[in-house]
Image (cartoon, rainbow over all chains, first blue to last red; front, side, top):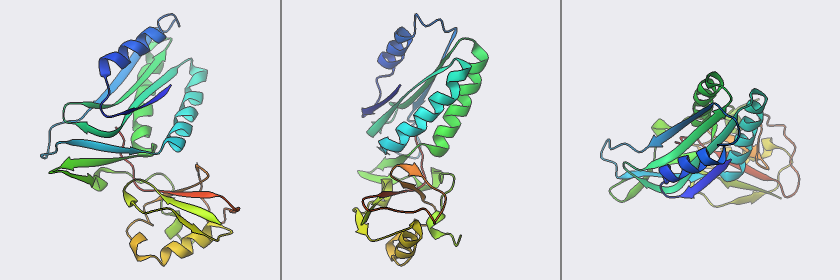
Length: 148
Length: 73
């Protein structure tokens, strides 16, 4: 399940809803990761652009990858502005036993940071500034500038 | 005609052009001074699938997307 929300995530509502949705699924482990905007470098918050078609196919590929392990993925992300101390990202893994969930959450979140088509901006003094220095080029980037 | 969309912070309107391969698109964008800061860091998708070859064939109506460096979460 992939959810996109305008603005900050309602973390308690989402975590509780996901927990309830799998309560009869016989999973032994539920491991959520919650990303919250920190107060640093004078920012007022962060803002996000999301390209939904490729995000959806990326998420679906991950869901198919972990299905043979008996695991289920859920993810929620914000679009638009999220202020300091609010949350913009939740990823969660359900699995029969803890080891699969622990390993999957790490791999999933790391690949999310490197591959998911989402762009982050700092909100500072009324401006929306692309966080280029904290961004990662997607694998295979630079094709159009190459001489292949 | 194919369309080219510039995602996220690139902030340019959609472009349309004649192109038979991705190489044609690359040659056109290399001539565009505004794209110089982006071209080496963007991934490319054709009809929402990431591609890895300039020889990728294009058809009338295809959508090419340029994806600059990402940072979700």
